[in-house]
Length: 151
View 1 (tube, helix red, strand yellow):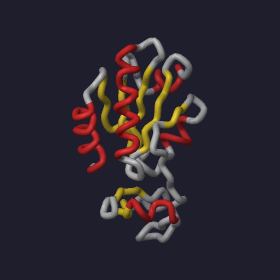
View 2 (spheres, rainbow, N blue to C red):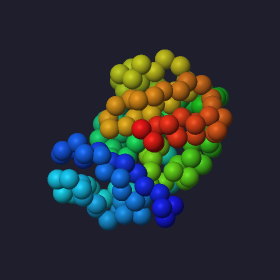
View 3 (cartoon, one colour):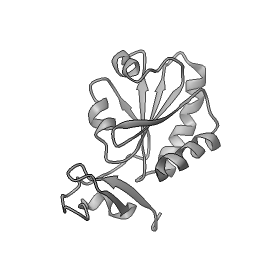
């Protein structure tokens, strides 16, 4: 992880900045306009998001976000949980993983056209750039992530 970097788009001037993961918690700044980024800490476990926290935690996130849209009654959703826990640890500092219970948060799931479960939303710079539907093996999710994180 010492050599790993993440690309963060400056909200002030739009410049894409490649920042070493180890420097994320020290409040780096944009290389072009020098606007400071807030210090970034990403949990090593998925976080729960709601209709009221989705914008702050996901849309405004400086890091890319993988959102797991799930429901308690959905067996395939439950089977994905350990995979997402593992991915959250593996990608700490480069990716935020969030879980959205669609039964308890209908506005956000509707806004993102979630009609099947589980649905994974890959969000970067506040926009959905990819989706995946169904219970996927870890290798398939990582294939999506490798494309998603390198964009």
